[in-house]
Image (cartoon, rainbow, N blue to C red; front, side, top):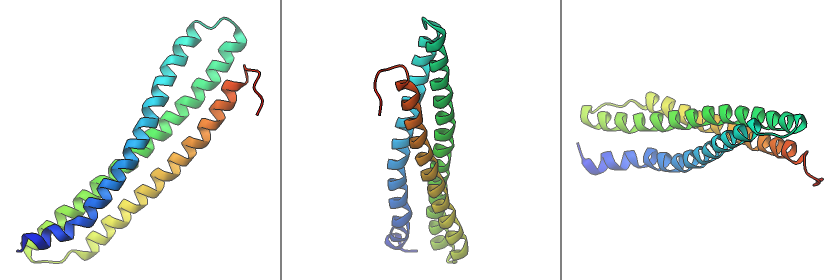
Length: 146
């Protein structure tokens, strides 16, 4: 049982966790912004002066709520990827301690982790697309035409 070998075999999953952590930070920032915007629009809706403005705000709130649900799922998949990568590290340590090879389990966990990142990234792309739609709805009340 050589500690440097254990550490060396754990480096790849650690780098993966670090990179995915940046993705998680980005998604949670988008999620927080969408939540804050939802709260602000809800307050604005209560004080809206006209029925047309209320209808516009309801459309924006609907879009933001859908975005929040999508971002929540995206966060879940990123966190699951981090957990799977962490399990790879634990298994690598156990392999070294027990002098055994669990390559198929490590491969399955790595593929699952990558799959979670792909799903999370796709959900993030959907959120970005929906945010443009929300902007279109918001601009309906203004004189701006794209």
